[in-house]
Image (cartoon, rainbow, N blue to C red; front, side, top):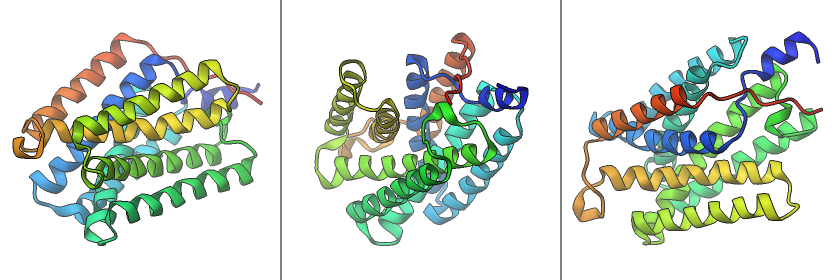
Length: 252
């Protein structure tokens, strides 16, 4: 392994329990933060998406320029993907008038299309093979689509399926438990299971975020989107600083 490859790989964190805990907090923050800009600030989904798209591009550019794994930068980029995912999904579902089902189908197509093109271009879609700028770009685009799809799935489950926020949280927590069981007790592809878990953590965060800030008469706790976002951000910072994350190892 050459030095340049080591530097690129060091930007991708090892997938551990801490990774998933921070990921769920980030997806919940994406929901409350995205809603704070598009709804609480009354900017709307289109303007909110434009703002977060710029932040996403800036964060990805900084992440790709970084020479080593920087946890704060990496998770800032994850937050950028989940906030733009929130407003983009809401724009597709509501402003375009295609509904949650239409938005979910559209975004699922984009996600699987991204994974297919990534695999056809580089031969693998495992996180542990991200060893070039091209692979890293596929990685972040795929993550952004997965975050957007997860938002639409969460809204569809809570609203259209009429399960509510608590029911949605139970559904996605159960599905995540199934993925974990499959990881340890089956021979299913770990790469496939990783992306399944990555997608499922987003709707879990979406319904939890909605539960925190939606009105009481809609089944939420009616917390301030700003205070909820600040609390989630503080939790993430504490977790990142307390639990040191290592870079993922490359596999050829």
